[in-house]
Length: 433
Image 1 (tube, rainbow, N blue to C red):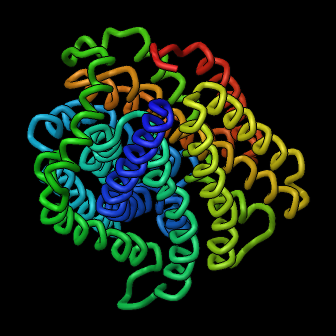
Image 2: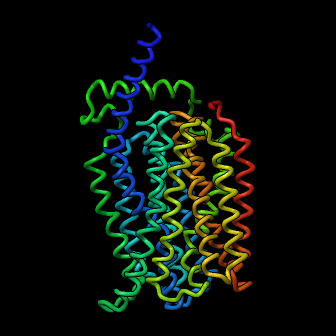
Image 3: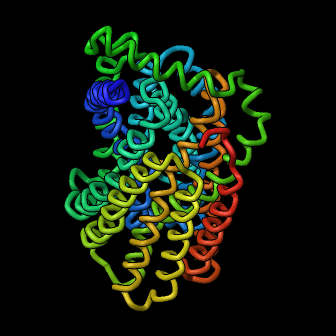
């Protein structure tokens, strides 16, 4: 009898907790999701701008690859300081500052006229955006314990795929329909029209988000206490410390290397997908945009289902490793059958599904390891180091394409990095199952 009563009480408590976290999710995730769509679109829309910009400004593939990638040098330099400021000063004001500054710089990209101006604006855009993604990952640890954070993270991160789904057709339409309007080229309109929403969203964040659970007036005192207890219980299992404790932690370096391999695949797809689709015989910019939405659409489904499975089984390493290997297989398939557009698109879709799935599953590992300022610094370091692949991958693919007149060897390189990441992630131990 006592056992039945205890089980009933546990069931009621879980149901109440589910309702509280559902309320948190409905309040936070939609806005963070929309913000990340804007952020990611401003970061990678240069891949579509390239379809017109490259010939208009006489840029080689190497110049384009360097310019696309130099964003991540600025991103790397300012990432850790930005995330530490966010942890100390509060997410609301700092995320708003990031979004407004990057929106202004993204729109200003329409005035690029030379390789040097291209490099400068991309570097400044990276510096402005530094801290946004790891800041949100850190912010979610203030609101969700580990056993609930995977699905919340995956819902937030599906914004990358939705940026592809929405951004591809939208960018293609802007390039085709706005070209010549007001004397501006389509690629100039692309940067302007896709930069303005980020500025507006920055002001929304300023007036909508709360820094911590204790500031959430839309939660009852009992609901705030429930979340606070869950977060405190998890924090007691984490390694506390300062910035240098995180930076000299071997596990943090291993996680950074794993993330570098995974993100190489992501940016290889993001920056070069329009070019790859064009190379298999699709000429119209709008058609390129519509076709590019297909891989991202399947990626959304794969991300959510895999993150849900990882949460349910409380297992991250094998989920991430198998997803990375799937992504590598898809890249190899797309290269092997590039003469057949249908099979090549199937390969790119499989690759995108695998690559996208690695990301939310991966972030369950460092957030289970670090707490406090160490979490702010460690998450920022892992993200910034991993995103250096956003510099190296586009640049190397551009150089390889200039030399071989094909993206095939570059995609093979990305596949090899994904396999390496799969092997390394199996060696990660966080102290939590």
